[in-house]
Amino acid sequence: MPITREYRVTGRVQGVGFRWFVSDAAARERLAGYVRNLPDGSVEAVAEGEPEALSRFEAALWRGPSRARVEDVRISETEPLDRSDGFAIR
Image (cartoon, rainbow, N blue to C red; front, side, top):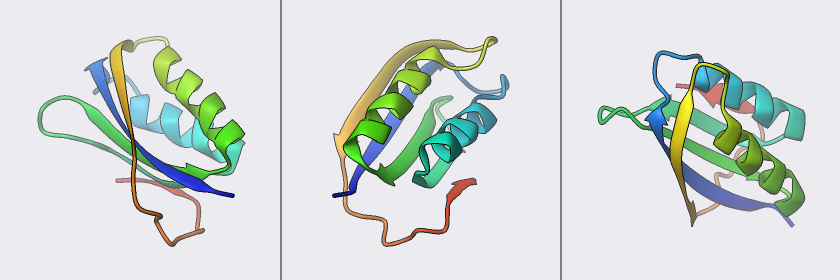
């Protein structure tokens, strides 16, 4: 059964290709959702999919692209997205 989680990633995560990295990771796991930069310098991602796929996605968030430096990933459960049209970069 699909679940939906919201992620807040902090560190050096803007200006390093992080959103594209997250989008690629989500596509590999066939997740729905989106990723966007926030004004405070963090990145927010919301992803919906099977629990095992979300676990792999979370591991990718901690890794990030080579130029990123991830300091923290906060995870919270959230309401379903009610969408299945893929993953968007906002």
